[in-house]
Length: 346
Image (cartoon, rainbow, N blue to C red):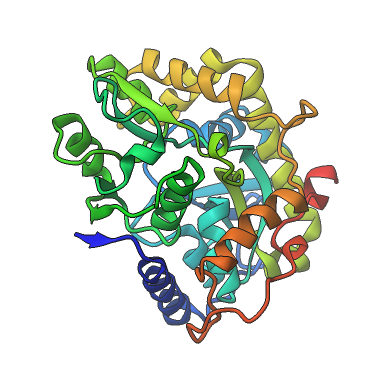
Protein backbone atom coordinates (compact mmCIF):
# COMPACT_ATOMS: atom_id res chain seq x y z
CA UNK A 1 0.00 0.00 0.00
CA UNK A 2 1.14 3.55 -0.66
CA UNK A 3 0.27 7.09 0.17
CA UNK A 4 -1.57 9.10 -2.44
CA UNK A 5 0.74 10.67 -4.99
CA UNK A 6 0.29 11.84 -8.57
CA UNK A 7 3.36 9.85 -9.60
CA UNK A 8 1.24 6.71 -9.48
CA UNK A 9 -1.05 8.13 -12.12
CA UNK A 10 1.90 9.32 -14.17
CA UNK A 11 3.41 5.85 -14.12
CA UNK A 12 0.20 4.40 -15.51
CA UNK A 13 0.15 7.10 -18.14
CA UNK A 14 3.69 6.14 -19.13
CA UNK A 15 2.57 2.54 -19.48
CA UNK A 16 -0.17 3.69 -21.85
CA UNK A 17 2.35 5.71 -23.82
CA UNK A 18 4.49 2.59 -24.18
CA UNK A 19 1.53 0.55 -25.30
CA UNK A 20 0.66 3.16 -27.90
CA UNK A 21 4.20 3.12 -29.25
CA UNK A 22 4.30 -0.67 -29.33
CA UNK A 23 1.04 -0.89 -31.26
CA UNK A 24 1.64 1.99 -33.66
CA UNK A 25 2.03 1.49 -37.35
CA UNK A 26 -1.36 -0.06 -38.10
CA UNK A 27 -3.55 1.46 -40.77
CA UNK A 28 -7.36 1.42 -40.78
CA UNK A 29 -8.61 1.45 -44.35
CA UNK A 30 -12.22 1.66 -45.52
CA UNK A 31 -11.18 -0.07 -48.75
CA UNK A 32 -10.04 -3.14 -46.83
CA UNK A 33 -13.15 -3.11 -44.65
CA UNK A 34 -15.72 -3.48 -47.43
CA UNK A 35 -17.64 -6.70 -46.89
CA UNK A 36 -18.77 -9.09 -49.59
CA UNK A 37 -22.28 -7.61 -49.62
CA UNK A 38 -20.94 -4.06 -50.08
CA UNK A 39 -21.35 -3.08 -46.45
CA UNK A 40 -18.41 -1.21 -44.97
CA UNK A 41 -17.03 -3.04 -41.95
CA UNK A 42 -16.37 -0.86 -38.93
CA UNK A 43 -14.58 -2.42 -35.96
CA UNK A 44 -15.75 -1.37 -32.50
CA UNK A 45 -13.63 -2.16 -29.42
CA UNK A 46 -15.32 -2.80 -26.08
CA UNK A 47 -13.80 -1.67 -22.79
CA UNK A 48 -15.21 -4.61 -20.80
CA UNK A 49 -17.68 -7.45 -21.12
CA UNK A 50 -21.05 -6.31 -22.53
CA UNK A 51 -23.10 -4.23 -20.09
CA UNK A 52 -25.58 -1.37 -20.08
CA UNK A 53 -22.90 1.13 -21.10
CA UNK A 54 -23.09 -0.67 -24.45
CA UNK A 55 -26.86 -1.00 -24.86
CA UNK A 56 -27.13 1.46 -27.74
CA UNK A 57 -24.49 -0.39 -29.75
CA UNK A 58 -26.34 -3.68 -29.57
CA UNK A 59 -29.70 -2.04 -30.20
CA UNK A 60 -28.34 -0.41 -33.37
CA UNK A 61 -26.99 -3.77 -34.50
CA UNK A 62 -30.19 -5.64 -33.64
CA UNK A 63 -32.55 -3.15 -35.26
CA UNK A 64 -30.50 -2.84 -38.44
CA UNK A 65 -29.58 0.82 -38.01
CA UNK A 66 -25.98 0.20 -39.07
CA UNK A 67 -27.02 -2.00 -41.98
CA UNK A 68 -29.44 0.68 -43.17
CA UNK A 69 -26.47 3.06 -43.14
CA UNK A 70 -24.36 0.69 -45.25
CA UNK A 71 -22.24 -0.47 -42.31
CA UNK A 72 -21.45 -3.84 -40.79
CA UNK A 73 -20.15 -3.55 -37.23
CA UNK A 74 -17.58 -6.03 -35.96
CA UNK A 75 -17.55 -5.91 -32.16
CA UNK A 76 -14.09 -6.58 -30.74
CA UNK A 77 -14.35 -8.17 -27.28
CA UNK A 78 -12.29 -6.72 -24.47
CA UNK A 79 -8.86 -8.37 -24.35
CA UNK A 80 -6.81 -6.39 -21.78
CA UNK A 81 -5.86 -3.74 -24.37
CA UNK A 82 -7.57 -0.39 -23.94
CA UNK A 83 -9.81 0.58 -26.87
CA UNK A 84 -7.74 3.74 -27.38
CA UNK A 85 -4.60 1.68 -27.96
CA UNK A 86 -6.36 -0.49 -30.54
CA UNK A 87 -7.89 2.53 -32.25
CA UNK A 88 -4.62 4.45 -32.36
CA UNK A 89 -2.92 1.40 -33.85
CA UNK A 90 -5.53 1.09 -36.61
CA UNK A 91 -6.83 -2.20 -35.21
CA UNK A 92 -10.28 -0.70 -34.59
CA UNK A 93 -12.06 2.34 -35.98
CA UNK A 94 -14.14 3.13 -32.87
CA UNK A 95 -14.53 2.04 -29.28
CA UNK A 96 -15.63 2.90 -25.77
CA UNK A 97 -13.67 5.47 -23.82
CA UNK A 98 -13.95 7.59 -20.67
CA UNK A 99 -13.22 11.30 -20.69
CA UNK A 100 -10.76 11.20 -17.79
CA UNK A 101 -8.79 8.20 -19.09
CA UNK A 102 -9.02 9.11 -22.79
CA UNK A 103 -7.66 12.59 -22.04
CA UNK A 104 -4.45 11.01 -20.75
CA UNK A 105 -4.05 8.91 -23.88
CA UNK A 106 -4.83 11.79 -26.23
CA UNK A 107 -2.29 14.00 -24.45
CA UNK A 108 0.33 11.31 -25.09
CA UNK A 109 -0.31 11.63 -28.82
CA UNK A 110 -2.89 8.95 -29.59
CA UNK A 111 -4.73 9.59 -32.86
CA UNK A 112 -8.07 9.43 -31.07
CA UNK A 113 -11.02 11.81 -30.80
CA UNK A 114 -14.33 11.58 -28.93
CA UNK A 115 -17.41 11.69 -31.17
CA UNK A 116 -20.26 10.91 -28.78
CA UNK A 117 -20.99 11.28 -25.07
CA UNK A 118 -22.97 8.25 -23.92
CA UNK A 119 -23.17 9.42 -20.32
CA UNK A 120 -23.08 13.11 -19.50
CA UNK A 121 -21.75 12.90 -15.95
CA UNK A 122 -19.99 10.70 -13.44
CA UNK A 123 -21.72 7.36 -12.95
CA UNK A 124 -19.15 6.35 -10.35
CA UNK A 125 -19.08 7.61 -6.77
CA UNK A 126 -16.96 7.14 -3.67
CA UNK A 127 -18.72 4.41 -1.71
CA UNK A 128 -18.45 3.12 1.85
CA UNK A 129 -20.55 0.67 3.80
CA UNK A 130 -23.71 2.40 5.02
CA UNK A 131 -23.15 1.32 8.61
CA UNK A 132 -19.83 3.22 8.85
CA UNK A 133 -21.04 5.91 11.22
CA UNK A 134 -17.48 7.19 11.44
CA UNK A 135 -17.64 8.21 7.77
CA UNK A 136 -20.09 11.05 7.21
CA UNK A 137 -18.27 12.81 4.37
CA UNK A 138 -15.22 12.23 2.16
CA UNK A 139 -13.18 14.23 4.68
CA UNK A 140 -13.48 11.26 7.02
CA UNK A 141 -11.56 9.07 4.54
CA UNK A 142 -8.21 10.60 5.49
CA UNK A 143 -5.85 7.83 6.58
CA UNK A 144 -8.20 5.03 5.52
CA UNK A 145 -7.65 2.33 2.86
CA UNK A 146 -8.85 2.72 -0.72
CA UNK A 147 -9.41 -0.28 -2.97
CA UNK A 148 -8.31 0.91 -6.41
CA UNK A 149 -7.98 -0.09 -10.04
CA UNK A 150 -4.66 1.37 -11.18
CA UNK A 151 -6.07 3.88 -13.65
CA UNK A 152 -4.16 7.11 -14.29
CA UNK A 153 -6.34 9.65 -12.51
CA UNK A 154 -8.34 7.80 -9.86
CA UNK A 155 -6.13 8.45 -6.82
CA UNK A 156 -5.70 12.13 -7.67
CA UNK A 157 -9.45 12.41 -8.20
CA UNK A 158 -10.32 10.76 -4.90
CA UNK A 159 -7.73 12.88 -3.10
CA UNK A 160 -9.17 16.07 -4.59
CA UNK A 161 -12.72 15.11 -3.57
CA UNK A 162 -11.51 14.46 -0.01
CA UNK A 163 -9.79 17.86 0.00
CA UNK A 164 -12.95 19.48 -1.36
CA UNK A 165 -14.80 18.05 1.63
CA UNK A 166 -12.25 19.56 4.01
CA UNK A 167 -9.79 16.68 4.42
CA UNK A 168 -6.09 16.48 3.61
CA UNK A 169 -6.51 13.97 0.78
CA UNK A 170 -4.00 11.57 2.29
CA UNK A 171 -5.04 7.91 2.31
CA UNK A 172 -3.63 4.49 1.73
CA UNK A 173 -4.24 2.71 -1.57
CA UNK A 174 -4.08 -0.88 -2.73
CA UNK A 175 -4.71 -1.86 -6.34
CA UNK A 176 -7.28 -4.66 -6.45
CA UNK A 177 -9.09 -4.30 -9.76
CA UNK A 178 -12.66 -5.55 -9.73
CA UNK A 179 -12.05 -7.45 -6.50
CA UNK A 180 -12.15 -4.02 -4.81
CA UNK A 181 -15.92 -4.35 -4.54
CA UNK A 182 -15.74 -7.62 -2.61
CA UNK A 183 -13.00 -6.11 -0.46
CA UNK A 184 -15.33 -3.25 0.43
CA UNK A 185 -18.23 -5.56 1.25
CA UNK A 186 -16.02 -7.69 3.49
CA UNK A 187 -14.42 -4.70 5.22
CA UNK A 188 -10.91 -5.35 3.90
CA UNK A 189 -10.85 -1.82 2.45
CA UNK A 190 -12.70 1.25 3.64
CA UNK A 191 -13.83 2.72 0.34
CA UNK A 192 -13.81 2.29 -3.43
CA UNK A 193 -15.51 3.75 -6.53
CA UNK A 194 -18.22 1.51 -8.01
CA UNK A 195 -20.45 2.28 -10.96
CA UNK A 196 -23.72 3.15 -9.26
CA UNK A 197 -25.80 1.71 -12.11
CA UNK A 198 -24.00 -1.65 -12.02
CA UNK A 199 -22.05 -2.53 -8.87
CA UNK A 200 -24.32 -0.23 -6.85
CA UNK A 201 -27.38 -2.23 -7.93
CA UNK A 202 -25.48 -5.48 -7.52
CA UNK A 203 -24.63 -4.61 -3.90
CA UNK A 204 -28.25 -3.74 -3.14
CA UNK A 205 -29.43 -7.06 -4.56
CA UNK A 206 -26.97 -8.82 -2.28
CA UNK A 207 -28.28 -6.97 0.74
CA UNK A 208 -25.19 -4.75 1.06
CA UNK A 209 -26.12 -1.14 1.82
CA UNK A 210 -23.73 1.52 0.57
CA UNK A 211 -23.30 5.20 1.33
CA UNK A 212 -22.26 7.16 -1.78
CA UNK A 213 -20.48 10.48 -2.15
CA UNK A 214 -20.79 12.18 -5.55
CA UNK A 215 -17.63 13.90 -6.78
CA UNK A 216 -19.34 17.07 -7.99
CA UNK A 217 -20.98 17.64 -4.59
CA UNK A 218 -17.50 18.55 -3.34
CA UNK A 219 -16.47 20.91 -6.13
CA UNK A 220 -14.81 18.36 -8.41
CA UNK A 221 -15.29 18.81 -12.20
CA UNK A 222 -17.83 16.68 -14.02
CA UNK A 223 -16.83 13.96 -16.45
CA UNK A 224 -18.30 12.35 -19.55
CA UNK A 225 -18.21 8.95 -17.88
CA UNK A 226 -18.65 6.97 -21.10
CA UNK A 227 -17.77 8.29 -24.55
CA UNK A 228 -17.27 6.81 -28.00
CA UNK A 229 -13.86 7.52 -29.51
CA UNK A 230 -12.64 7.06 -33.06
CA UNK A 231 -9.40 7.08 -35.04
CA UNK A 232 -8.86 10.70 -36.06
CA UNK A 233 -7.11 10.00 -39.36
CA UNK A 234 -9.63 7.35 -40.41
CA UNK A 235 -12.55 9.64 -39.60
CA UNK A 236 -11.02 12.52 -41.56
CA UNK A 237 -10.52 10.19 -44.54
CA UNK A 238 -14.02 8.71 -44.22
CA UNK A 239 -16.33 11.52 -43.06
CA UNK A 240 -19.50 10.11 -44.62
CA UNK A 241 -19.05 6.66 -43.11
CA UNK A 242 -18.15 8.24 -39.78
CA UNK A 243 -21.28 10.39 -39.79
CA UNK A 244 -23.46 7.42 -40.74
CA UNK A 245 -21.90 5.30 -38.00
CA UNK A 246 -22.19 7.91 -35.24
CA UNK A 247 -25.78 8.74 -36.10
CA UNK A 248 -26.83 5.08 -36.26
CA UNK A 249 -25.14 4.46 -32.93
CA UNK A 250 -26.76 7.54 -31.39
CA UNK A 251 -30.14 6.27 -32.59
CA UNK A 252 -29.55 3.03 -30.71
CA UNK A 253 -28.76 4.90 -27.50
CA UNK A 254 -31.75 7.21 -27.97
CA UNK A 255 -33.93 4.10 -28.14
CA UNK A 256 -32.40 3.03 -24.81
CA UNK A 257 -33.41 6.36 -23.28
CA UNK A 258 -36.97 6.06 -24.58
CA UNK A 259 -37.45 2.35 -23.84
CA UNK A 260 -35.07 1.10 -21.14
CA UNK A 261 -36.83 -2.21 -20.58
CA UNK A 262 -37.18 -3.10 -24.24
CA UNK A 263 -33.61 -2.23 -25.09
CA UNK A 264 -32.28 -4.05 -22.03
CA UNK A 265 -34.01 -7.14 -23.41
CA UNK A 266 -32.20 -6.59 -26.72
CA UNK A 267 -28.87 -6.24 -24.90
CA UNK A 268 -29.51 -9.58 -23.21
CA UNK A 269 -30.66 -11.21 -26.45
CA UNK A 270 -27.47 -10.13 -28.20
CA UNK A 271 -25.30 -11.38 -25.31
CA UNK A 272 -27.30 -14.29 -23.93
CA UNK A 273 -24.16 -16.24 -23.04
CA UNK A 274 -22.93 -13.64 -20.53
CA UNK A 275 -26.04 -11.65 -19.51
CA UNK A 276 -28.70 -13.76 -17.84
CA UNK A 277 -30.50 -11.50 -15.35
CA UNK A 278 -32.94 -9.40 -17.35
CA UNK A 279 -34.46 -7.69 -14.31
CA UNK A 280 -30.99 -6.48 -13.30
CA UNK A 281 -30.32 -5.13 -16.81
CA UNK A 282 -33.64 -3.31 -16.87
CA UNK A 283 -32.96 -1.69 -13.49
CA UNK A 284 -29.48 -0.62 -14.61
CA UNK A 285 -30.68 0.75 -17.95
CA UNK A 286 -33.53 2.63 -16.32
CA UNK A 287 -31.12 4.31 -13.92
CA UNK A 288 -28.78 5.35 -16.74
CA UNK A 289 -31.58 6.46 -19.07
CA UNK A 290 -33.37 8.53 -16.43
CA UNK A 291 -30.38 10.18 -14.78
CA UNK A 292 -27.22 10.21 -16.86
CA UNK A 293 -27.67 10.11 -20.63
CA UNK A 294 -29.21 13.50 -21.48
CA UNK A 295 -27.53 16.88 -21.16
CA UNK A 296 -29.04 19.93 -19.48
CA UNK A 297 -30.89 20.72 -22.72
CA UNK A 298 -32.45 17.26 -22.85
CA UNK A 299 -30.26 16.20 -25.78
CA UNK A 300 -28.19 13.06 -26.19
CA UNK A 301 -24.57 12.72 -27.23
CA UNK A 302 -23.33 16.30 -27.32
CA UNK A 303 -20.12 17.46 -25.66
CA UNK A 304 -18.87 20.90 -24.64
CA UNK A 305 -15.42 22.41 -24.51
CA UNK A 306 -16.26 23.72 -21.04
CA UNK A 307 -16.66 20.23 -19.58
CA UNK A 308 -13.58 18.90 -21.36
CA UNK A 309 -11.48 21.82 -20.20
CA UNK A 310 -12.62 21.83 -16.56
CA UNK A 311 -11.64 18.21 -16.00
CA UNK A 312 -8.67 18.59 -18.32
CA UNK A 313 -7.26 21.47 -16.29
CA UNK A 314 -7.40 19.30 -13.18
CA UNK A 315 -5.55 16.48 -14.96
CA UNK A 316 -2.96 18.95 -16.25
CA UNK A 317 -2.41 20.58 -12.87
CA UNK A 318 -2.10 17.15 -11.24
CA UNK A 319 0.75 16.26 -13.63
CA UNK A 320 -1.20 13.41 -15.20
CA UNK A 321 -0.87 14.59 -18.80
CA UNK A 322 2.42 13.56 -20.38
CA UNK A 323 3.65 13.60 -23.96
CA UNK A 324 4.82 10.68 -26.10
CA UNK A 325 8.19 10.74 -24.35
CA UNK A 326 6.62 10.60 -20.91
CA UNK A 327 7.40 14.22 -20.08
CA UNK A 328 4.68 16.34 -18.43
CA UNK A 329 2.98 18.69 -20.88
CA UNK A 330 4.35 22.21 -20.70
CA UNK A 331 0.96 23.75 -21.45
CA UNK A 332 -2.65 22.65 -21.55
CA UNK A 333 -3.88 21.08 -24.80
CA UNK A 334 -6.49 22.67 -27.03
CA UNK A 335 -9.45 20.85 -25.54
CA UNK A 336 -11.65 21.58 -28.55
CA UNK A 337 -9.51 19.10 -30.52
CA UNK A 338 -10.29 16.25 -28.13
CA UNK A 339 -13.93 15.93 -29.19
CA UNK A 340 -16.28 16.68 -32.07
CA UNK A 341 -20.04 17.11 -32.39
CA UNK A 342 -19.90 17.42 -36.17
CA UNK A 343 -20.61 13.76 -36.94
CA UNK A 344 -23.57 13.70 -34.60
CA UNK A 345 -25.01 16.78 -36.24
CA UNK A 346 -24.43 15.44 -39.76
